[in-house]
Amino acid sequence: MMRPTRKNRVATGTLTCVRFLPLVIAAVVLTACAIKLAPDYDRSIIDGITDANEQALILFAKVESASLPGGYASRADAYDTVIGKFEALAIQIKARPYPRTQIEQIFGIVPSTGTQPEDLRPLEVPPSYNSIQTASATLTRMRDRDKGGNLTRGEAKGYRNAYVTSIEQAITYEKAIER
Amino acid sequence: MTIPFDTEAIGKDIVDTLNGILNDDISRYVSFFKSQTLGLAKQAAWIAEATATGEIDADTRDWFIGNLQRMTEDFIRTLVGLTLLTIEKAWNAVVGILWGAINTALDAASIPIQIPVPSAPSS
Image: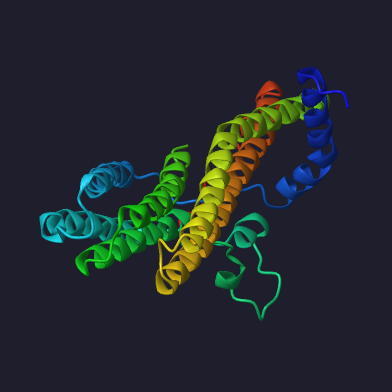
């Protein structure tokens, strides 16, 4: 099969836009109101995530170079500090004002009188809130296993991979809302 | 009185703007999608291997399985959030172009009216 050229891709994209143009214009004419579908960017949140992430990666480095299982006491403070930072960040992210439901903003109406606007919202909270909670739960589980003298180096690899995946989600979203 | 309003030019402007927004966002998020799917696949492979070699017991395996499900849900939520951001940019750009066109036409016809684009609801 022939590989699509850049020219072809642009042409296809243009065609797609043209196809949906009447719909977009019709929808705009219906309401003609600027919309906001994500919370405001907050520099202190991204700074907080960056700082907590640095602390978490230092903790992972300490765990991976330690003689496991054992030695939890030397890492106890680091665990508590980083888990505390993530819990505080989750609260800060959730406390931020969240825009009204998209359907309500775009059409100015709610489709059914029996449906609450909140039920139409695909995201109750910013997705970064869930990702931070998951990252925090991963660190908490690793701490508990370490504290109980059950953490091995092999198991720590699983926690690191899980943590990195979650934190990447949070960072990507929080940076994307800077618009 | 004829109001100067170039609908073809406005339509082209909208198409070009939407193309720009879509192309920028897609190229920006492709590396994130790749990295996430690789991370999730890597974790699934690790769980299978750690279970097979006895590195983790049944309780820990169950925890990692639940955690993998949570990470996958979070990834999908992030995709939805990023898609909504793209819709927001596209919508607001189209509104801006149309309202700008109305105001430009009114101005050209020396009609002293400026129609403001309503601002986004804050909550």
